Length: 295
Image 1 (cartoon, rainbow, N blue to C red):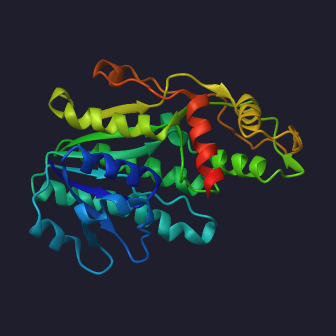
Image 2: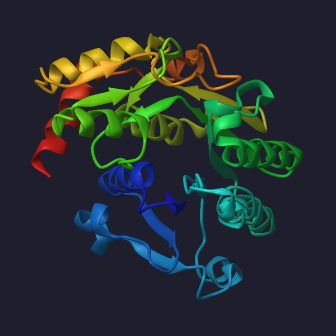
């Protein structure tokens, strides 16, 4: 297939790009000024790139014929000053791409969504990120009469080379550095942790079964289907990291308001397509820890 991919240099996108190239797909990756190529060096020479900050997107669609667009680019935002970046990556870019897809008769658009705004909830801690994802989701649903859209709602993805500021890498780094104290909330909430390889496998499974989707808008929840208490995950990481010195102060920090208590994927549709989770939480965490040790 001829595939247009956004976010191909990011955590999810780089892993997906490597898989797509390995499967023999032809991929054009949308990048912007300053995109870091280090995670895609093994496939850099087998990938075409288009910098949409230097050239208009219309030029891209005039030059290539695509079968599918996969949008994985995302912007979390580090402060309120990043609202413009969040809107650009999470709303403006995907909606603009869908409009081009409609114009150039591209059949499929895969959007990458988050469990943070499941059922229309806007998560206060990542307010602008969560709000932007929900607004994008709403806009895409309004366009589904023109193009088939598949919305991937990801649970808590983790693995090597992830953003060091995210939950799992932060906890691992704290234990590997033998921090004296690790101050946390009670960590009673439950999350569905899924290893990056299994997420990539879900995308690959769907790409291989696009013709099986009859609806114009398909919602897919991507996760193991099981949630686990954060406190248990943290204690597991401490053991796997071989840390015996860090004091974990559960309950030291105040719980966030309107916290998501329990989230897990309803993944029956994916399983019916033949997709399965192949990496256990323990094995995925060990691989991630070993990777971070080597850096």
